[in-house]
Image 1 (cartoon, rainbow, N blue to C red):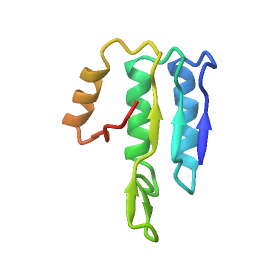
Image 2 (image 1 turned 180 degrees about the vertical axis):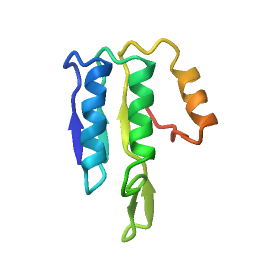
Image 3 (image 1 turned 90 degrees about the vertical axis):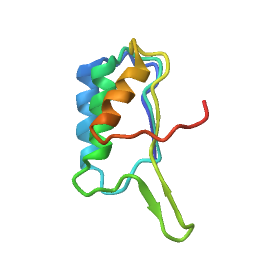
Image 4 (image 1 turned 30 degrees about the vertical axis):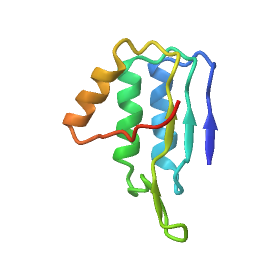
Length: 103
C-alpha cells in the first residue's frame, strides 16, 4: 500500500524504475514517498503520468465499501524541482490534475 523511497538519492533515471513498478501493480498504491531525493520536474512529470495512464486504470483508488475515490498520495518535497507549481500547471493543461492535500 505504501512505498517509501525517501532520502535514497534518487534522480530522474530512478524515477523511470519507479514508473515501471507503478505500471506493473495490480492494486493501487495509497502512498508514494520520494521526498529528499534529486528528482527534477521531469521525474515529477514521469510519476504523475504513470499514475494517470496506468494500464489497468486503477488510479484514483476506488473503495466501493467506504464510498470513496482516493488518489495516491505523492510526497515530492525536498527534491530538485525548481518550479513545482508550473509543472503542475503544465500537467493540468494535459489533463493530469493533482488533488491538493495537506502537507
